[in-house]
Image (cartoon, rainbow, N blue to C red; front, side, top):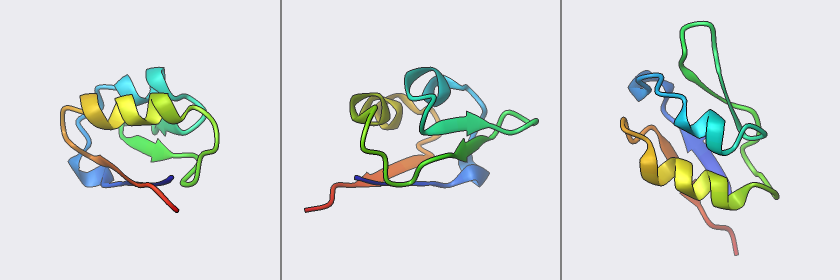
Length: 64
């Protein structure tokens, strides 16, 4: 899975950090920071983060 973010869209809800803390973090302003753009663990948390992100700032592409 390849994960990308659009930090300029982020509203700082932090749900992604709670669901997949090994993949996402927040900067001092609460904006999403991507820690791992090709996670091999916490994949369900990443998928849920994409689904619940209120700003639609997180994207993924499943790799073959």
